[in-house]
Structure formats: C-alpha cells, structure tokens
Length: 519
Ligand code: SF4
Ligand code: SF4
Image (cartoon, rainbow, N blue to C red):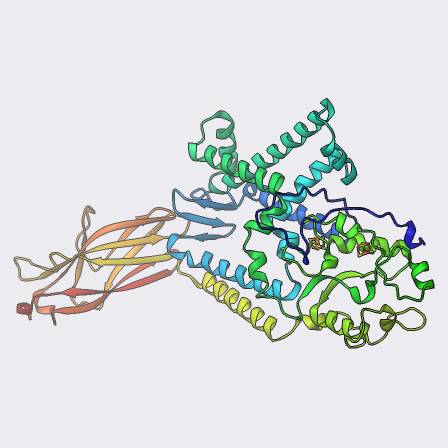
C-alpha cells in the first residue's frame, strides 16, 4: 500500500474547465491521452471489437434467397429500389419499416440517456470508436503519453518523420477501409471489391470512398475531441434528457475533498483530508482533455476512463474504489449535504465516515431500482409498442398486391352491341423472389368479362398471368359489361388476385362507369 506522496503526479493541462471556459474560437490545445486500464477500458475494447466487426464484416455475410434475388445478407439495392436485411425484404412503399426503426432508435437513445447518461457517446458513437482505434495506432507507433509529448515537442528528426509518416499512412488505410466498407452495403461486396481494384467500378463508388476516407481521417485522426465539443449537437440536446436520477460519471468530492498530496502534514495540522491525492491520473487519461473534478461539463462523453484511472490509484492507496464513479445527481446531492453538515461548512469527509474509517450508513449509493421510474417506463413502453407494431406488421404483411388505375379519358366506351367497356391499368406486385402464376378474377359485376391488351386470351371473368420474381407487372385490362347488366352510372366491383400455389390472395375495389342512357 502506498502513501499519498508515493503516487506519481502527472501535470496535464486541461483544454477547458467548468470554471474558466475557453472562447469558442480558441486555438486547439493538443491532447495526449494516457493509456487507461480497468474494467471500463476492457468493456470499451469489447464494444469496439463488436461495433467495428459488425460494420466491416456485415456486407460479406451471405443469405440464400434463391436464384432470383441477391445473396447478400444486408443490401441496399438502390438500382432496383429494394432493401434486404437477412430474411426481410423492404419495397419502397414499405419504407415505413425503416422510419419505424429510426423512431425506435431515437426512443432507445432517450431511454439510454435518461438512464445512464451519454453512454452512446462514451461507448458506441462512431466518432468515439474510430478515435479510440486511431489512438491505438498512435500509441503503438509513438508510445504512451510522455513519449508522444516528447516526440511532439522535439525537432523534426528522421525518426520523428518516419514515426509520423507511418502513423498517418496507417490512419489513411483505416479511413479508406472505412469508406470502402460503406459502399459494400450498396452492391454485391465481392463483385464491387474486384471492380474497385480493377478500376471498373462506377465513378460514384470512388467518389464515395474518397469522401469517407477524408472525413474519417480528418474527424478521427486530426479533429478528434473537437468534433464532439464543437460540431456534434448531442452534448447540447442530452442535457434536456438527464434528470436527477440519471447516472453520469461523477467526481465524489464529498469524499475526495480537500484534496492533498501531503495527508499526514495536513492531518497533523488538524485539518480534514479527502481521498483525492491530486495525482491528475484522471485528467491524463481523459480523451476530451478535461478534469472531471471540475464537475459536469459539456465535453465529458462519459467514457469512464477516469473511473478506471482513479480506481487504480485508490487500489494502490488501499482505499475504497469509486472516488470517481457513475452516480446520480440526487445521490451526489444527498452525500454533499451530509459532508457539509447541510451546507454549513466546506466538505469534511469525516462526516461521511464512521470512526473506523468506513462509509456511514447514511451515505447514498446507487441502486438498480433507480433506473425504473415513470420516465423510463414511458420510454420502455413506447419502444416496445413501436417494436411490437412493426413486428406484427412485418409478419402479417402482403407479399402479393394489386393496384388498379381507372382510365380517365375516356371513362367508358359504348360498343356496337350496346355493351359498355371500361379501361384500367392493373399493377400486379409479386413481392417474393420466385416467379408466380397469378390468377386475376373480376367479382361483383354481373356479366362482366375481361380482356388483356397484348395477351391472346378469350374474354372471360378471369385470366392467369406469369409475374417475374420480385417484380411489378403492369397490364392494360378492358372490362366489358352487357347493356342489360348496367345498373348505374358507377358500379363498384372487385379485382381479386390469387396465387394458387401458395393460396395467397388480395383484392382491389374499383369502379365501373357507364353513361346515364344505358340504364
Ligand atoms: S471526464 Fe472521464 S468520463 Fe468524461 S470524457 Fe474524460 S475520462 Fe471520459
Ligand atoms: S480523482 Fe483520483 S485520479 Fe483524479 S487526481 Fe484525485 S486521486 Fe488522482
């Protein structure tokens, strides 16, 4: 177990502070985050591996849809206006599923933020994940914090040139792979990869890769924390979603203050001493370059690396972990009231401890039940209802559809035998990746017969037609009704479509127009 003075003190300079805010247009101060280790860092490695794995590998997953549809598991087929997601195929008119998923993602984000603060920012936001990845490369090439600071301040030697060039080349390769992976979601990935390298891909593919390479390299490698602080609206919006029961990364000054590196001397002088040894380890690991001890700040993405750093220091000192921890504002306020005797004095950590040095029973700790409150119940209910609604709709949706458009001019034609003929444009949608024989039948219109333009079939009450897999077939159909069967200017009737193989059917209610004189 170490003494306060034996803990290494780091001297990082914060880029901003809750007390003294930098002007919006101040020149950037470089940050050299120190490598952190601990449970949150491990969790972030796992999340990073999963999110990057999903992003890079998904276009390469195959899904057998038969010979008439692409076998890429996730594909946005812009040319044919289809979205494939494993067993789900979305047509343009079904885009409400995607809109529903986006609404679910939004409500999910509200739920997560109101529960555990900016967890999205700290763990899964692409900016965070790619900055983390770029930092891994930087550390591997240039070393940890001190080595990088030294290299940055040093003159341009051959070694510095080689190290810097290597870093930027690897960053560019990662950025190009990122841009490359994106376009694979829009075409058959193996085919497009071959076309990219043989120079036969469409120009838009090269332009997209170039733009995404540039943005990934600039945002992830060069701008880093500035994207979160100055460009992203989320830090501003999230404040409206937090309440006193939301978990955020918190410096517990009710046990940390007064901070000192000379505890023995201060205690001997009869002054209270907090747990913080003012080592600045929490500041040195912060990828945003701030000091969490200044309180909640817009820059904090709640990545929890300062928790890991401080827990490591507490372990060395033999003190309880959690000087920096995930805590709710209500617990923090309750503990501050305790540590300041209701606000009557400055923080005195002895007020939150018993004589044997343990925390008093009156100290508030987070409990999982605090997550479950009216606000989170409402978010959970909304999220679940939208999800169930989408699922129900997906499982019961039609895969065979008919749309009918009545000719506007002429609305009807009187034939030489006195019968009346109406013309329609009939659209048959076969929404499965297999060819089908669709039977179209007219119903509810006595004596009616149909004939199809360009199809050599005798006029009848029904006809069968082949529809290609995953395609829309448009037909010009005439419906003829004998004069003695006309019972009004506008009679409704149905056009029913049926696939005799799967027994799937659908129908459309149309109108048959006739002149007044025919009655
Ligand atoms: S203050 Fe802590 S939680 Fe916030 S960004 Fe810095 S290291 Fe992450
Ligand atoms: S909060 Fe923890 S890591 Fe930060 S200076 Fe104090 S003791 Fe060190």
